Each structure stands twice: as structure tokens, then as C-alpha cells.
Picture 1 (tube, one colour):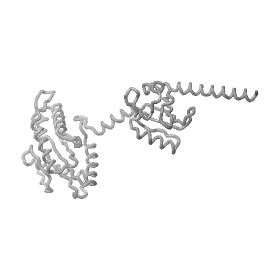
Picture 2 (picture 1 turned 30 degrees about the horizontal axis):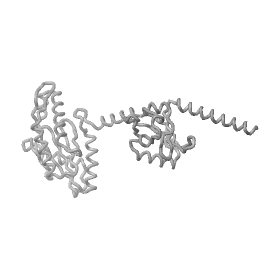
Picture 3 (picture 1 turned 90 degrees about the vertical axis):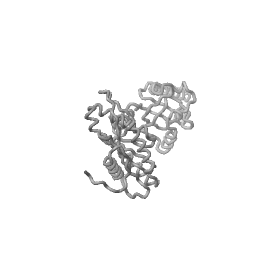
Picture 4 (picture 1 turned 45 degrees about the vertical axis):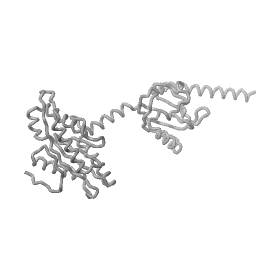
Amino acid sequence: MQDITALKRLQQQLSEDEQRFRFLAEESPVPLVITRVSDAALLFSNKAADVLFRGSYAEHPGRSMRNLWVDAAACDQLVDRLQREGTVRGMEQQFRRFDGSVVWLLLSVTRGRYREDDALIFALKDITEAKERETELRTLAYTDVLTGIPNRRYFLARAALELRKAKRQGSPLSVLALDIDRFKQVNDRLGHQGGDAVIRCFAQTCMQQLRGEDVCGRLGGDEFAILLPETNRAVAFDVAQRLRLAIQEANCLSASSGAVATLTTSIGIAEHLPLSGEIDIDELLDHADQALYRAKQAGRNKVEIWTGQNPEPV
């Protein structure tokens, strides 16, 4: 009789403990989710998690949490890590909410038991705003504010990567250096705001003529450079001529004065060949600048290819 009474008391205590745990978990301000290890089925989500995911496991019986990961492979990697380490903290991943929207979450996950199942217990934190700020700051760091195209910092970094790739694969790569002919006169005539409008128009016109893999960057003032991966100088020359004509035909309107600026551009081309040796991106850009200088000397609104003969400065 005493054994039965003790057993009932123990069962009651366990039931009370489970109710207390469920209450604490349900009311926790930290989003909590429990999934089954074998199939990632949702077993439990508290109120905070339901708000976060805009839906609850009760509304989606049998739903696998794996389907909520934007990168499903990362889910498999998490399970592998948990098998080795038991706990994973500080993992950042994107998830789809039940309404289809995407959220960035910081995960802390541990293995455990939930009722009769081997389970994964997730504690979650919404870091979407922080990730968006991070993206904005990264964009500002690598984007030219005036034109919205890559700035000098990004262009040089990307060009260096593409040059290493070209060397590794034995493929050609060309760089164009270009600017606006007599930009100072244009700027003096239209004023500062009008000059800014011309630079924006010039950048937009260039971008419209390029492929998705090409990179156009503003290096400063009216100086621009264009990276053409897997492109030899013959094809680069055709691209440059198309750019030159597009700039010549563009009517860049100054919103401040209403004046229309007709522009021309001079373009220099330098090519990296598979057997070019240990040339770096600064040297390649210098070669393109020398070709640009020759285009200026030849009367402007022209395209020149670097041939290895350095012009004498005037």
C-alpha cells in the first residue's frame, strides 16, 4: 500500500513538474521550438515562437521544420554538429515564416528528450534588423553614393579577384579606363549639381551597355573603370566603341538648370593574357590609363588599346 501511495505521489510530482515546465516554456519571452530528431517534425512551440513564425506547430501538424530553413543543407550540417558536440550556439540562419516571409535568426540548439522522442530544442533570437543594417553598411562601404555603382574600393577588390581567377583558368581579361571629355568645362557651365547629374547619367549609360558579369566602377571625379572578365582586347574594343557611341548619343539633362549636356568619352583598354606574367590589377589599370591618355592626345572621343609603348607626358 505504501509503495502504491509513494508511486502515486511521484507520478503527481512528475505531472506537476511537467506542468510547471510547460508553463515556464510557454510564457518565456525567448522563442522556443522543439523538433523530433528523426524527421525534424515540430513537436512544440511557445507563444513567442508562434509570434516570430506567424503561426504555430498546432496549426501545421506534422510540418517539418527543415522546410522552414532557407538553406536546407545548413539544417543537415546543424544535425551533424549536434551529434558531435551536443550543443550549438550562435549559429545565424535565414528561415521562412509560415506566411512565406523570411527572417534572420540566431540559434542556440541542444539535444534532449521530449516525451518519448529524441529531440532538438531551439532557443531563437530575431536578428533581421541587425542583418539589414549590416547589409546597408556593407553597401555604403562599397557603393559610390552619387551614382549607385561600385566605388573605387569595391572595384579594385573585385578586379583583383577576377584577375587571380583569369590567371588560374588561363583566360583573358580586359580593363577599360574612361572619363568624360572636357568635364571641367561641362561642370563650369552647368554648375555643381548639373555636373553631378552628368556623372550619374554617364554611369547609367555605361551600365546599360554591359553584361551582368561586367563591373563598372567610379574611381573618383569623372574617372571610371570597367572590368570585362573572359574578354580579349578585340571584343573589349567592340564594347568600348559601343560605350563611346552610347555616351555620344545620350542626352544628359541637368534637373537644376534644365540644360542638356552632350557628352563624349575617351577610353583606354588594357588586356591581361594568360601568358602576361605576374601583372597585378594596379599595373593593368595603369596600362589602361596610358591608353586613355593616347586617346586624349589623338583628339578625344576615341578608343585606344595599350600596346606597351608609354607616351611622353605633356
